[in-house]
Amino acid sequence: MEDILRMGQNKQVKCFGCFISLMEVLYRVWRDEGENLGKLAYEQCLALPMEWIHESPDLLHKAAEIKATNSLSLADAWIAASAVLQGAVLVHKDPEFRALNLDQEILPLKGKTFSTR
Image (cartoon, rainbow, N blue to C red; front, side, top):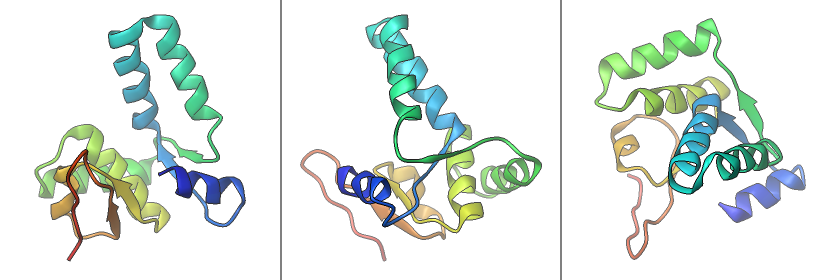
């Protein structure tokens, strides 16, 4: 992931993030480490070399389609829809995404690796 963000910083690739990922960072760090650190983590995400995709009618409809036809969490449906609408490769380490028919790069979990078919 670090290499991808570095390439984004150098304008070699364009990086996107879904708004729901910002909320996930904020609430998870807040819950585990306190409100101030949660807000700091959120601000640090905003400083990454990424374009943040926010809710729109097209994104809502694509996320609803993905959620209706796949077994994923609501947040993951938004994230997948963001990748699809941007024509981007979804970079992740979440096994839930593996069943989706979209371009993806699966990052290794600690001690495990995955490959796409």
